[in-house]
Length: 138
Length: 64
Image (cartoon, rainbow over all chains, first blue to last red; front, side):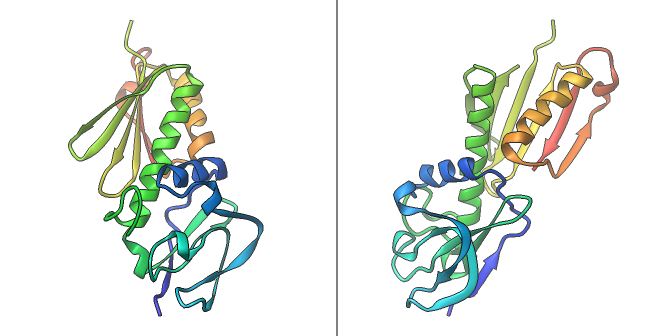
């Protein structure tokens, strides 16, 4: 049975930004459960796990033999809860990457785009030195 | 007039974001940072470069 890991140090603050980031990774709104109260996560065998979360991607949308992925609401934002088995993305946009890294990148890309919109300006984007570098005139 | 620009860098290996605010005076710089934090959440670390304390050309680096 694959252990779940709670990424307490990688809190994703805003729900709408998070949902947009998940959609960018291929988990469109129809594949993501959003609950007002925490619900249980389930393992790949349909086994109920002790972890709970408000936002859940059910295992059939994660990949074959995968477990649910959850985002638990806290005062600071949403804590990703990902099983060890699903630590690497197996399907969709960004497959092959570490799941938490892909999620953080998508989240932060969404932040950058939203910030650029607040300034009514375009985002220029280049890849350099292992980074995605974006500039916004203010 | 100095170029007023926000540079947002995302590390492809870790997904972490770093923000540089350049060419903006102190209080306005704080406003920009707060605007970003309103979207992204609180920065885990904020540092002001020496330019922050000059009359013109302010630079703030924030990391989350």
